[in-house]
Image (cartoon, rainbow, N blue to C red; front, side, top):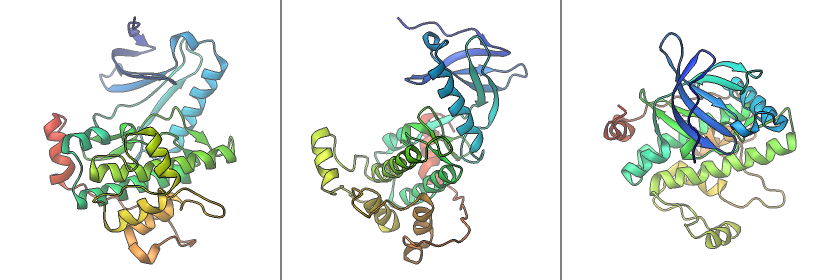
Length: 280
């Protein structure tokens, strides 16, 4: 039986449950001024768990490290509440996965634009010392104003905590990004639905890139190759550089200043998806 949502967290009045996962629960709530916010808390049965408390601490540090252009704005943390929680901006919209499902796959130009924007988000996270750990379409929200924001930092790893684990999670983020842009263009996985076949194709370096083309195809092919001895995946900053500048920026070890390019989503691409879903 599913427990009933709490009535409130401090001054925040809960209106509904937004999601539940291994790391906790997220609720939609309203603050005293009437503003909607999202509340993230640990599971009720883990209130006394130090491990769960430390995990929530880590989420807060991760979220506060990210520029608000890429993630919900942090509002406040209450670690000593009867049930520890933090409040953040509530971003209304649909997930990237849902947008792709509604269209069956984005057009070529829209897929290229999405790749640039997601690469900018991932580069911002990694530069801030945060590896997301679950960089999938279900954790990327397309807002009503067309912005794309990454959410759910429950599996995030901080570089200041463990450099080795950070590098592992960063590498996982890059692979998931490659899989996501292939899925966005084709509406299907780069390695197929069958798990055993998917592992075989990944180990053999045989992703199905389908109709993905141009710079996004070059990037996906590189990210979905299995790393071997002496070969690492390119960083998110290099990926962004290649997507924006093409061959002139391919996998260079430059020291130039990283510039995030904010691309405007074509109204014919994501806009009609939002309207079709009732968000826009």
